Image (cartoon, rainbow, N blue to C red; front, side, top):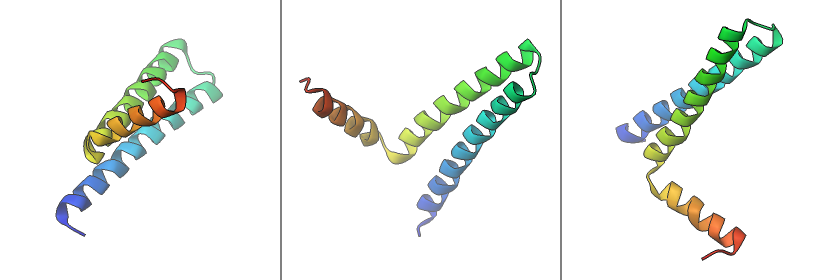
Length: 80
């Protein structure tokens, strides 16, 4: 495995781990009925970490991942 691939793999796992941790924190916040301010903070953190994972994953995979998704969506919906 090349060094560039190793770095991308580590970055991808870090993004996935960050996203999973923030969603777990949100789940615990809901489960333990935390104060409203903490709940809002957990929701915002989960949203930002999910966005970071999606955009970071797109950057790591290359922008063709987004083009393939768009092409698949057009094929499924029958739009031009």
